[in-house]
Amino acid sequence: MNITNNSVISGPTPFLVPSNSPIVVLLYRYVLGFIFLIGFTGNLASMATFMQTTLRATSTAFLFFILAVSDTIFLFVSIFDFIEVGLTQEPILLTSYDNLCRFRWFLKGLTQFCSAWILVFVTIDRWLRTRFPFKANKWCTHRNVIIVTICIIIIGISLHSHMLSAQFFGKFVPGVATVACGPVQLWAPYTLFFFVQWPFIQVFFVCLIPATLMLLGSIDIHRTIQKTKSRIQTVAMNQPQQLRQARLHRQMLILMISSIIIFFVTTLPVGIRQIIAAYAISANTATPLEPIINDLAILTVLLSLNCAINFYVHCLTSKLFRDEFIKFIKIIYQLAGGTTGNNTININHTIMLSVVNGHVHANIPHQQSHA
Image 1 (tube, rainbow, N blue to C red):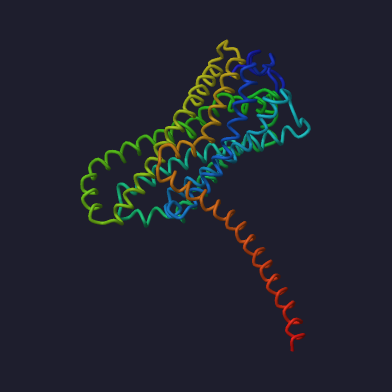
Image 2: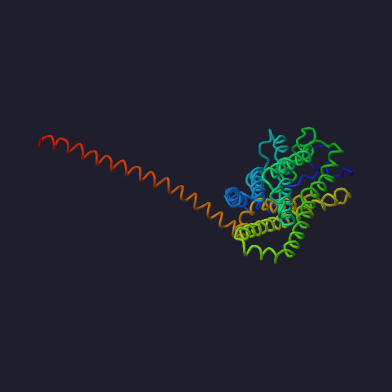
């Protein structure tokens, strides 16, 4: 890559230092703040709902639980951007900025990778249950989910490990969205890798490959269900247990499809823009950096939405999920009410004992006087 004034010069900052546009500042202040509000609440509610008795028995629900954890970590790490870009509008914690860059960008990349591939394995889990219903209980287990999750994390750490290197990665343009962190030095090989090759790698492993696998799996699941629909309905009508299993399977499919749609809508635009930007830089075209930075900043807010709205879409699309969430709320309400009720009962019981004992002690002298 030829280094020009529009790219990188001898130092970690561009020659023409970009800035956050007013729309980016407003989005990071208000929209991202709103996303945090609904995201943390919704993800915690999702975790609680997927741990309910009916759902937690399935490996799919366990995967959705892990997905909610990954999404929560992504939102937590993004709080720094919310404060720096949306609130203070200037760099913060500059003395530890390099370490924070490595920590933040590594975790954000890792959680994006994990969330995408967990959704892939949700699709695989449903595909196995549809294609091989008699072997699904052997393959689709909580133990296998844990093994798959560990493998995803190991691969994700390996893929993003270059961001943990103090020699390569740190602060780039502090305070500016999407380019606050980057190469710490003008070292041509890593600079070329980070700005030209890494976006392609990231988009393919976090967006395009997972999206393709989800799409193919969903199409095959739909075709298989259409072929076996009449047979399943005939068997299920005579066996209530089979009917419940079919309903659970159908509701899990609805949750899977809704999550995949959210993934497509929120991640594909970011991936496409990253590829266009990387191609423009590699071709050394006279493309100004500021529009690219602002576009990616706006799309990053959209990407954050992917980690915040799964719970609400699940509530809208799945009756089973709604029922389990309402059941959880009732349990919490009963526990809270039960505790208060028990305290009241204990207090009343103590008062009654005191009153009775008072009457007894009062009657004893009275009886003695008569005697």
